[in-house]
Image 1: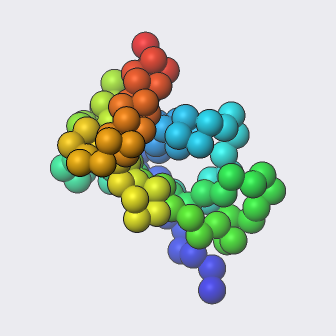
Image 2: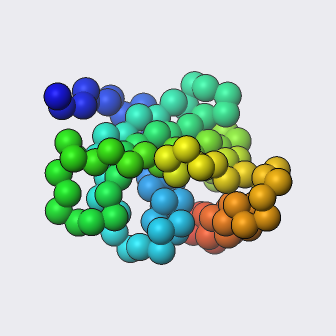
Length: 113
């Protein structure tokens, strides 16, 4: 079964989430499959499938990456992101996850200046 095509709602949010994912995985290129963005939600967000291996067919991508931002307009301030079922936010009790969130937020802030 092939995943349903998602209609892009916010290319800015989608590009920003891809930037967060590249920073998290420390990769210049990330293979991205289906992308869904929700600028109308509070907080606005993006969900996408990805692969760290180039050449992977979008239909074979099952890993997910999700981002939430404080607003749909730039500059986007990262509120939370999740890799599969593990989420990272500024309010994490787990110190390592909190630090990974802060690193992602700093990299995003630097890229949007």
